[in-house]
Figure 1 (cartoon, helix red, strand yellow):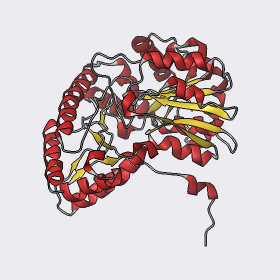
Figure 2 (figure 1 turned 30 degrees about the horizontal axis):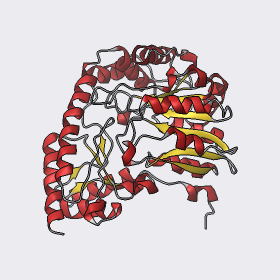
Figure 3 (figure 1 turned 180 degrees about the vertical axis):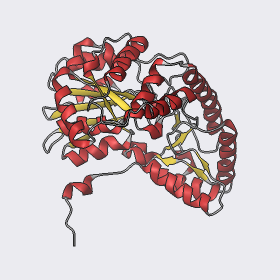
Figure 4 (figure 1 turned 90 degrees about the horizontal axis):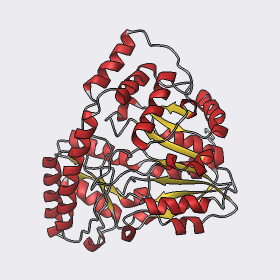
Length: 390
């Protein structure tokens, strides 16, 4: 009988992949499934990016690269952050990793241990809480409420800080809610953190180019007073439809660059070389495809919010960013998990229960509108049928 480490029992999972597997099984059995569950753009990676990756392979980029990423890519990241946010970033502080999750994992490993507390958004990306528990630290949820547009309340966050708090994780625009925290709350959080110099901050800004209604992204990089303890996470997966390429990055403070580089060396050595050259083309090449994708998401957002609000027992707040709707389904009389299962089993519509993103997600279901308008319309129609039959 193998005896594994007890810490493995504390690892959670990402339920969207479980739903994807169940939906795939039903589809293989002949069911007509519409997937509004997975957080993945339904667009192809732009051709110029694909060709750059192919060219890199043909040019012989087959070997190891620096653990923190090829210099040209880190320089391009710094230039892109200056272009988009006006932020000054030293390329030496940029660390390229295979996706967004390694940054989350490394940040939590640096600060998480028994006796420590790490704050995270709830409902929020499930890997935050999973990795915090794995580290042995105590996860402290930051409640994101519908009445606040699923933005965090800075006073509430600051009021939860104790002498055990090591790290605060924030995410705006947010998964799963589509919420965007306004600049006034971010200003207030940063001002309050001046009284807690021992607390680090990880800002997950992976959806930073997906905002709607004329909103602008507020990057934590633009607050010099916290740059010495800020980890800013971003990447290519969502913006450039590159989820399967596994490419992300973070900007790390000077004091942590050597530590995270050692973690990279111990964990994955380096990121695939050809993928990095594809990422370089993504940042330095034409951005038309990005604008087109965001415009398409915006059109879908308007339709899905309107249609969800037409369903009996549903109430859906506007989605400010990302590509998720997070309707309140309490009026249906179902729990989040019951709704998820009925939508999939009876209507053939894959969604994700709000409780997959934390306890504060009860009463909600996440719909990804990274799918065609035709499929979104058909999905809402099918769900409407089963709700009428309740």
